[in-house]
Image (tube, rainbow, N blue to C red; front, side):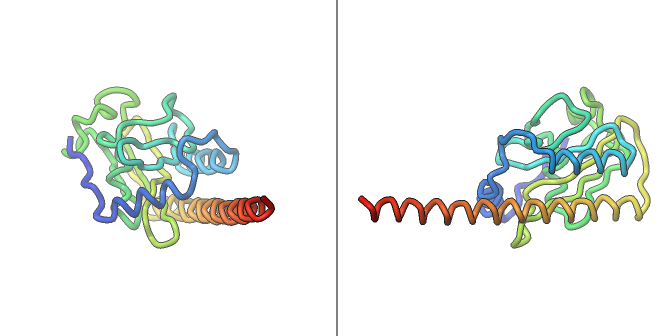
Length: 183
């Protein structure tokens, strides 16, 4: 198994991921819709919104897996965040980077993987929208573009979340300043 290299911008990438405020939060319908759409669009049994943290990939949205995270060292998504387009593995068992990966040799028995990186404003990849199958398969350029397009829509939702987090922080700091001024 070949672990993904650490991005050169890792510190900034992790800071951006934390700033969004999505890690370790309850499921939300708006993100669950994206994984349902990706699963249906790509006709796969598994679709995930994966946020790649320092030591794990944590699933903000997931359909088809019983776990909420996996170690980053075995993560396909840790490879995908290095791409601009879709990171695509037609048969993981035949790919030397993944053939002995525990996610390939054991549950969930990944054979096919396609992951489109999700970027925050400024171009930092914080995770992926990915689709997974337990059998090898091929995607054509239209399917890969459709996954990228859906990930672009997800990016807009993430950008809105970041804006909401920033506005809330400003509002809270103003409220605190008012409260301190009243003392």
